[in-house]
Length: 329
Image (cartoon, rainbow, N blue to C red):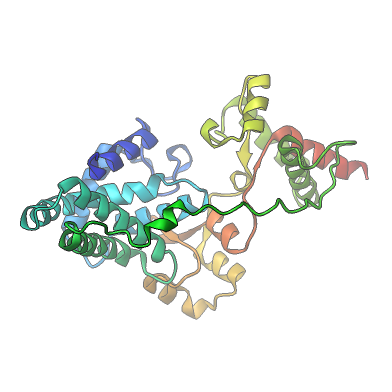
């Protein structure tokens, strides 16, 4: 078995590549704060900040917030970065446990990583960001001890027959949709993608001036603004990218400001002004927050997620077709 700590480290470094790491908004090019180290330097600062044991660390609070936001997008980069920055505090303990209980070191570390990630998921709501790292470390150590004490048994899995169980996938539900495209099958992924984009464009056209939409799309098409990464694209999207020779897809949330002020977010969520900052301190505010200078900000994507506003991937051509359709009505 490979060392789980090393696997996490390799995964994170591959995800960040050699790009500057922005823990504020996730994209250094769009961030107001200009100091953005590469990942190894960022990790060193995070480890030092954690070792100092302050009552709370803005850096770690922001890391946890970015992790929550990335989870909403189906991206594990920041979640795994949190685990990677905690492994220096688990290395020595894992060796001691493996030595004292004659357990395999790689197995111990695999249990630690699994427990840390399980705790990350379990603390997604109702836990202050400042408490999450400590809970992850504690869970990792507890899991390592629990595994070490039973590692010499024949099986630690229990009901192993369940691993052989196979259930039929439920039949696909009927799709109730009609395309703007004439004689097109909405069950076709490429058609469904186009419909989503056109519907989004129709909504934008009702509330946003056309010149703002055009300027945003011009920025996407000319590369002044980045779209989604190719690895996030579906097969139908990749086929379109291959045909056109360029990737112009973007998330609908990219059209809006990266974040909004805490008072505005509280008003949208219906949180009383008198309770806002207490909820942020205790981790009960509905959305992750971060610091920009001395002010709390709320990620627009997190706000959309809490309000059940889907953050879909769309293509400028489809959005503009939908907007034009509304203008013609």
